[in-house]
Amino acid sequence: ETGVTQTPRHLVMGMTNKKSLKCEQHLGHNAMYWYKQSAKKPLELMFVYSLEERVENNSVPSRFSPECPNSSHLFLHLHTLQPEDSALYLCASSQDQTNEKLFFGSGTQLSVL
Amino acid sequence: QKEVEQDPGPLSVPEGAIVSLNCTYSNSAFQYFMWYRQYSRKGPELLMYTYSSGNKEDGRFTAQVDKSSKYISLFIRDSQPSDSATYLCADGVGAGGTSYGKLTFGQGTILTVHP
Image (tube, rainbow over all chains, first blue to last red):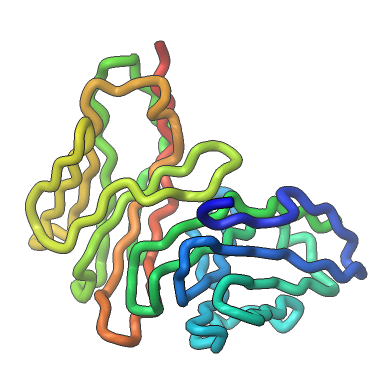
């Protein structure tokens, strides 16, 4: 596997469910990110991790809970989501937290019913 | 006012045409500028990166930055159907320990190149 891989590719969940999104990067990078991409809106930065430490939480509701157990893996735990949370969730990595060149995964298309 | 403005299109051109994609930005602190290409059902991939005013060329692609006008452009020469994608401009303040790769993205322009 190369690059940044995300699973699952698609997820449908009810508002009372709990689910997790997974991201793995095979690039040896030290920083990882979660972005949200909604239709007709710019990419929104959600969280930034550098060497497993969260360095940015961009005013994201607590129903989104990130976890970074090591520099290669990133999770986004979801619970009691709202329909407006339906979007494409993208994971990205960069060499380190000061490097602007982001490498994205293919995303998880989330639908909240 | 959005920090980065980009016309969402859609833009449809015939194969072989020259395509011009544009963004304007309002934050004078932006120092570097990128273009990402996003195919359907894929994540964005970095296409062009520039850190200064002027032109940068890579094959059929030219990125142009005019800091005095706060205007960035991406030109695609001899466009191909395989260029059909969404093109995102992204601007950043610059490295220095606090940027956290924090890019401000435009909305994206949907481009279709038809045979």
